[in-house]
Amino acid sequence: MEKRIPPDQPRHPIGVVSERTGLSSDVLRVWERRYGVVRPARAEGGQRLYSDTDVERLRLLHIATLAGRSIGRIAHHTTEELARLVDEDGAARAALDARRNGAAGALADECVDTALRAAMHLDAYALDHELQRALSLLGLQAFLTGVAAPLLRAVGEEWHAGRLTPAHEHLATDAVRRVAGEVVQALGQRSGAPA
Image 1 (tube, one colour):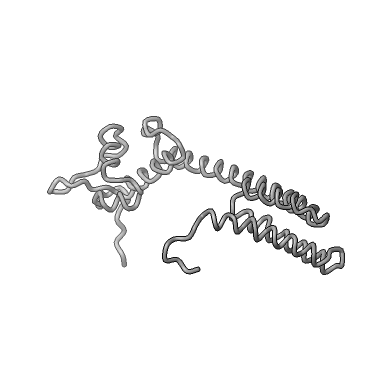
Image 2 (cartoon, helix red, strand yellow):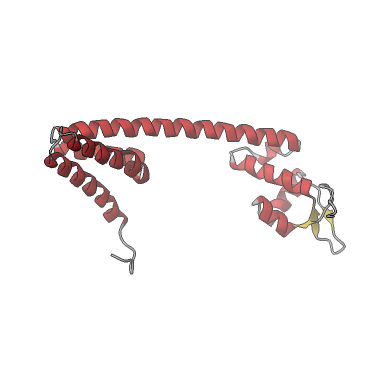
């Protein structure tokens, strides 16, 4: 049977703590000296030894500072308070990401509708303009997955249903290829990269 080590027993050297928390050894020392965030024990040779409880507290402090909180303002918080702050920050970040993704999805849908109308009217200028706008607002990845692919799928479905001709499909395909190709050209190729 494995013997359980109490979480408050010092046993981790500073290198292990740095690896587990993402904090450099220098930051750990400064936070200890300046803010008293933890008080590590000392081994016989004087090396710092941290407990599991210390490691968890430091990990939470690091996450909270990455969210924009000042170490000076949160150093005195208990570990439980830090855990609540980190949870609140994570929930707020998730809500913001969901709003951003929802807004990006709505924008992508709007761009697909506008681009499809332009393709249906064989308006190359309006189609190109809308694709360029979508690319600049959404970025390459969201443009490809949220605009280009759905647009080409919608054009294909309309062609299959007999509402569009091959000319419409060629116009849309060429426009997407041209806009995406411009980005690839702008990024350039590394020397020695395959063609």
